[in-house]
Length: 183
Ligand SMILES: [Mg+2]
Image (cartoon, rainbow, N blue to C red; front, side, top):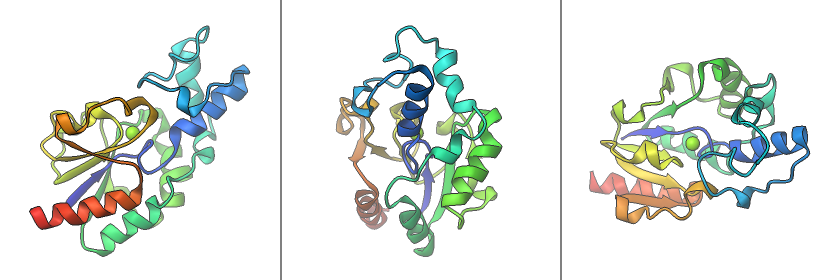
């Protein structure tokens, strides 16, 4: 199968590092479970979107983002099993080089640049499956939809929208095994 895989909060823990950085810089204490929506500037009244979002654009930011537990091993296994794994990420162009060097190829050294697609329009990409925490990336796509649970999507009815909700990479591997037999 061709398996499309999101980066942020699917294979790595962006939100955690982002909250840490904003909290530290502006003396706040927003917790991971305080997040309710996609827009993470909402729990920071008094800060502008530019202040909150700009924090992730600062040099060195990606060095502090860690992989999701089990994600490197799982992606390696999927490739070893003969699947085509493509990273599909809506990364702003300013962040691409540092994010690739300091995060993707550091923690996932078996991936190469020709497996990376940068786009904000994931529905244009052809694949058998997309694994993503952003429901807006799954809705309307012509692929099987695996929703990685994240604080901003926990109240979303995945099943009603034809998606399979998962909570970790062990579950994802199980779902892929099941989908393989259905294709
Ligand atoms: Mg994401």
